[in-house]
Image (cartoon, rainbow, N blue to C red; front, side, top):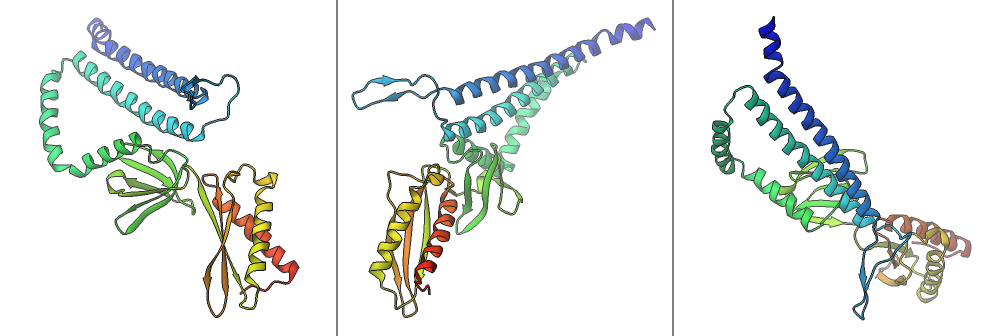
Amino acid sequence: MSSTIDYLSGAPLRAGIIIAIGAVTVVVARWVLGRIVRRLSRAPLPTVDTSGRFTVTLGSVPDDHARVRRLKTLHQLLASVITVVVAVVVVSMVLSEFGVDIAPLIASAGVVGVALAFGAQSLVSDLLAGLFMLVENQYNVGDRVELGALGSTLANGTIEEVGLRVTTLRDDDGRLWYVRNGQILRVANESQGWSLAVVDVALAPETEISEARDLVQDLVTSVLAEPSLADAVLPDRPPTVRVSDISATSAVLQVRAHAQPGQNQRVASVLRRRLYAEFTSRGIKLA
């Protein structure tokens, strides 16, 4: 009985303490990381004006949504790295407590790593591609993107998670896609900078194009100035209306309006609805 107690109070007890310390370390480290990320996301960015003066805005400042998404992506990645590193250290220490010599294991891991480097080139390619995607800020969690290879589309939707090996996104049908980073050769990001709302209006051949164009221009300008679309449009970039196509059956006017990232479909839907109502009330025939 005493020998059993002595054994349990030896290596198993120390191993349990190591595991407990490792778990606490992961929890505390991830909590501290979360606090740092939240503070960074709320911190105002310094600016430098044309005279070279360095300015920091204090008080309440608008959120930089791109920075918040980028910090969220890095938060997920660093949290995973912390968990893996602590787990490896804990396992190594626990094996040492039970008398397992980990030196041969480390040496064997080196040999296995060399073999895997030759046999798992696609895995290395995925990891390197994921690292460069994060460093270059090609997309972040919450961005709407289209991921493609040469001549084909792999998936399109909203990014839910960015890892070193796999990018996860959800499409408009609710399906969750897992795309290996090494397969992604091109990225179309709709959530960076600005987007473009495009509306085509096909008019009947007998319609007076100049009058219809002026009508569309005035209506689009007034609609985009409404308060309900203040958060969706770019006021410093006026919309354009041009004749994009002419045929025996129709004349097409194309409306192009700059919108906030990801808001182009919303703006286009509002413009289509208002243009149709205006044309109907004025008796202008559509093709």
